[in-house]
Amino acid sequence: MSEHSKVPSVEASELAKKLSESGLRLTSQREHVFHVLRAQTDHPTADEVYLRTKAEMPEISMATVYNTLDALVRCGLVKQVNVDRAATRFCCNMEDHCHFYCEECGWVHDIELSGGIRDFPIRMPRDLSARQLDISIRGACRNPGDCNRKSAGSS
Amino acid sequence: MSEHSKVPSVEASELAKKLSESGLRLTSQREHVFHVLRAQTDHPTADEVYLRTKAEMPEISMATVYNTLDALVRCGLVKQVNVDRAATRFCCNMEDHCHFYCEECGWVHDIELSGGIRDFPIRMPRDLSARQLDISIRGACRNPGDCNRKSAGSS
DNA sequence: GTCAATAATTAGAATCATTCTAATTTTAAA
DNA sequence: TTTAAAATTAGAATGATTCTAATTATTGAC
Image (cartoon, rainbow over all chains, first blue to last red; front, top):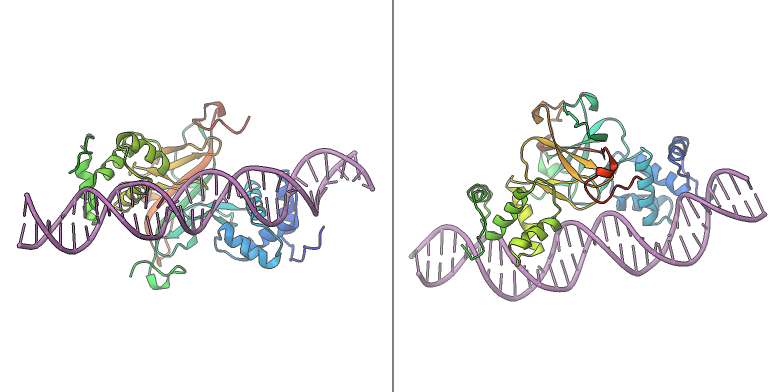
């Protein structure tokens, strides 16, 4: 283990387990990226993850952030969120939920589901095998002035 | 009306109406792009739309294709489909339905919903106003050999 | 129909997100 | 330890999308 592991690693064992289940190794970079994702409940882009992780671990590279995010997605610890043409966002809430995308400010919020995702009234064709259901809602935060970021485009 | 309108324009009146409702003009480029989208039930990328439209109207530019797709989305005739990190796809099926994304071959299929989209068990927070619900399912076409494109990654 | 104002189109440059490359370092296991 | 495989790195390359400034088309008033 290198000099870099200076981060609370309560999550490390879960991370190590999940990674190795997918034949992936635990590295200090992966620990830091995972820690950064868990530290906030927002939905950062790869670039935002890079900047936040760099604050903890200045030597990390963008390529590693992408590799790590892919690794975390592959081993089921993180979800990719694609809501518009902009950069992909990442979400470490693995409970059943859906995403709200504000078209004014670009912010992505989690929305709880009232039932389990299995209860959704979708009939799957026999020739397709589903791995994951993603639900997203486009709309606007009310009170445009309160929009989280980017200053609302409308008025 | 220019020399370019050589295309069956049953759709033109609907298109003109919807465009003008949003304060947008009907142009021959917009007619062609809309026609191209309606001609197939797949989910082309902007680049694919560009190539298909160019076959009917060789002078059209990529910038116009993007502008037009945006216009069609804004006036409610077309939906944007974002399923992964790749290029956005466009869908002119405006019935309630969801999208299946095959992780092996990249193909996007429409899936019918068994109920109306309003029946979905989601409780919207009061401070958010929804405009559109998007549901997508990630998975794999069974029979990997039959995958539509890109030759299946798995074996 | 003609004109002016506005909107749309165009080619190409610019930007942004993501992936690739090849060299180096780290990890895990013998 | 040693070694093979996996991960990391910086930076180049690619691909998707947006921007820019000049030109052309459309609309509505006359």
